Length: 91
Image (cartoon, rainbow, N blue to C red; front, side, top):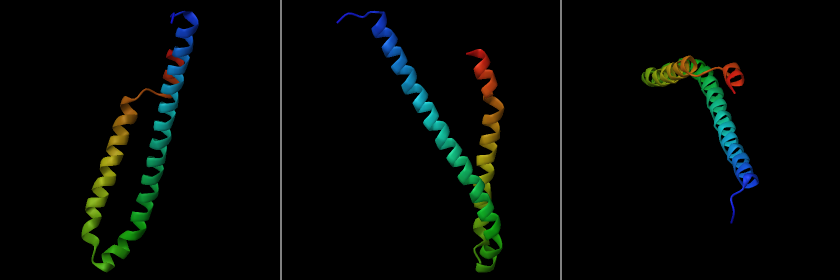
């Protein structure tokens, strides 16, 4: 089996496709997680008075701490990650 230019080009295109598909899938999962967290925040805000009445209000600080940690991680990622326009200009 000879390795020629066509074989290298075909494998390179396939590798780019696999990496791009994986990246797009990861982005889709990230958007879904972000959307779910936004909905979760709204649901928790609506449920806090109910939890307090039921005597389960002591769980709210732990839930809020988890949401706060997610928001901090998201903010740190947004500050350190290059913007989409940078990616298009560089490549």
